[in-house]
Each structure stands twice: as structure tokens, then as C-alpha cells.
Image 1 (cartoon, rainbow, N blue to C red):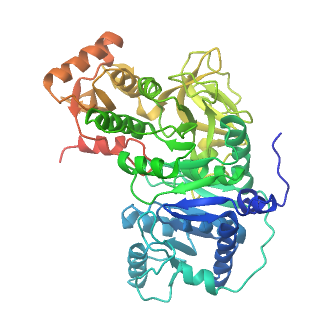
Image 2: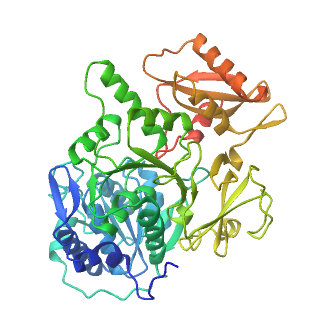
Image 3: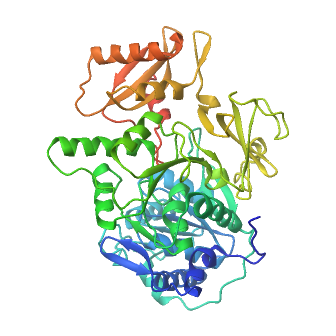
Length: 543
């Protein structure tokens, strides 16, 4: 059993305990050629705690972090934990209205962000358009990887705003409050695929529990690991894999502030020589395509020699894509599934146990059940092996509930259990297979079609790099439409479209093949790196 004492703070678990272990001089962070030891991160984290005290931020209040992946992210999180306040995070690339929503929804009393965002928020506050509870906005320069993230941050001249570096150097010292393991520590947002994103309220023990059972015992993070992430730190998947998990074992988190592209990721891997890479399926495909293009041009392909393993989550990793990767590299990919409701991954492939097409087995410490869609509680009779149902998960990292949404919380959380809403089947060996979301199923000609099944089929065709299938209305009828990105060397044409349709007809039930195919250069993504089908459906609406 994984248990934690009543008095328990994540700043100790993830950071201060490394100092107690004599690892204070180990590298905790790298940002280009700049680096910070655990000692340095600890000092800056406590300085940020003092700055929160000076700003009047009280325990339990929210500190909203909206910056790119750079070292101040680490001491903003750890300093917030030390204060007994609650971390919330947002995407700095999001439209200002989205960030305004987060300020209002979280009722944050402190905001850590870049000058241009601070300017916009302050303008709305002073203009009366935004009612906020902000006591202080700490600004961090928006710099390229390797530049100084602690330098001067110019922005609006307003008493609400202060450069983070100045605040760290001026605040008087305070003692750390005693924090209970079940006090709120962090809010993790849903992806907002339907309506505005909602926050899952998580306590300190939640993150330590998953780190112990998943990161350490299942996947095997270890001392000396060097990590790089494609998803950005504001996304809980990456907060875990590229900050919390390496810190928990005395590893090194390597950051880059630029938008993730095959080129920027290749630079990061070349620079940092990571042992662990956090990835998502769409970028795995793009990296393979980029590698093929480089080699076709007579250049060196992507060097993955330093990487012990990669992680994949956010959406199912198609079996065909995994096989392409395995044919190119010796480095494994461990595909898993988690959620903001459970903080992180609770079922996964793992070292020595990879089953292509599956999401692996349950992480020890969690319990999973596949129940009929109409089940109103975890005690319902489970589906038979191979039968599709809704996945329920039980574990000590379960959310307290959704902030300001009890109706939705009652539907999702049942005591220790969480109803995920994801459709799965489990085989006789205990391996899980994702079948999509219940609300993604399409009814075509009176028959149900799972877009994921069509996508997986098309991904096996040699021409397809990535694909997304949605339902569209045509002549009053629902039809399947595939948006297809082709691999290098293939050009969009009616002939290719017909090939793909015939390919699907030969491998799926006849009614499941895509009636319509549109070739695109890329698929839209949400800020978690998932394919944004909501955006694709919006394209089909009449203008």
C-alpha cells in the first residue's frame, strides 16, 4: 500500500528531499546552455513562496501560471506548494479571452505570466471589463531557449505588476506553513472538448501516489534520467513526465520555450541527449516523416540513440504508427491512458510488456472495470472480455471533483471511483483497447461506427501519415468523412482517395468506409496536442 503521512507537502516530496539526500548539486533543470541545480531551484522556490506572502496570497488561494516552458515555471510551482496555495496553469499561446476566463474562473490572487499577457489583463481590469481578485501579477520575459528567463521584463507600468526576479529578491523571509496531505495542491483542467474547461481539484497526496506507482514502479524513471517533452508543462501529462517525475528521482528536466515542431524537438534531443521523451501520436508521426525527408535528401536522420524510452498518451497510438517507429528505432514507446480526473496515467504498456494496439494493463495501485454504458455505479456487472463498455477507474489520485460543477461531478465521481466516459474492451490477458468516446460514435445507415476503428484502418495504408474521421451531414444523412495527411512522396489525388476507400472497404464492415475524403497538410490540434475534432466539425458547418 502506498501511504503518506498527514503532514505532507509536494515541495518536500519533489524538491527538498533531494537536498536531504545530498543531491543539491545535481542538475535539476536545463534551458539551452543555462542550468540550475536542485539547491538553486530550492532557493528560488522559497523566494517565490516569500513573494506570495508579501503579495498577500493566502493558503488555499490559486496561483495561476501562464508562461512558456522555462525554469521559472519550476520555482513558481514549487514555491506555490511551499506557501500552501494552489497551482493552476494555462496555455500562454491561448487567446487572451481564454486566459481571462482562467483568471475569473480560478479567482486567482496571483498570476505568473509574460508581459504582453499582463498588459492585456491589466487593461481589462482597469477598464472594468474584468473583475478579478488578483493581488499581484509577476512577469517573466518571453525568451527563446537559452536566453535569460530571469532578465528584465518590460511591460505596463502598474502597481499590480512586478518583475518576478525583482519580487524574488525583495520579499522578506517567512516560515513554511504545515500542510496536510489532503489539502488542495493543484487544479488540472479538462480539455474543454465540450464547453469551457473545468478544473479537477487535486490534493498533495494525489501526485505523489501516481509518481510512486506509475513513474517509479511501472515505467521505471530512475536517478540520472534526462527528460524532454513535446506537450507543454501547463498540460498535466507533461507537468508529471517532464517536471515532477524527474525531480522525484533526482533527474534533470530539460526545457525549450519554442512551439513543438519536428525541427525544434530534433534540436532539443540533439542538445540535451535525453533518456526519456514525452510525446503524443500526432508528433510521433511527424517526427518519422521528418526523418524520412531528411534521409531522402541525403542528410542525417533524427538521432534517438540516447533515449531509453518514449511515452505516448493523450490519444491512442495507432498500431501501424508504433510499427513504423519500431522499424526505425530501437527505443520503445510506452503508450498509456490517464486523465485530469486521475492526474496521470493509470493503464500503460511498460518495459518488457508492449502489446501493439493496446493501452497495456492497469498500473499496480489502480483498479479498472469495463462496465455497460448504462451502469449507474461501479458495482454493476462488468462487460465480458472483448465486449465494449465504459471504463471506470479507482485509485488514490482521484480528483475531489470539478470546481463549480457539482452536477457533472456527481455523474463522474462515485466515491473512490471515476467514470471516465471512454469506451474500452479488455481481452483475456487484461490488455485494454480503446474504442473511442461514447459521444464520438457515429450512426451511419442505422449502424454505429467508431471513428477510431476507421482511423486505425486507414493508418495502415502506406500513404497515410495521420487521419481524423468525423461525421458530416449530406443530403440529410450522416456520413463519415476522413481528413487525411499524406506521407512524404504521396500527392493528393482522386486516385489516392479511391484507393483509401477501397482499402477500408476490404478490411472493415462495408458501412464503415469513409464516404468522403479530404486531403489536408495538417490536422488542427488543441492545446494538449490532441487532434481537435471540434475544429474539424466546425469547418463543415454552413457559413
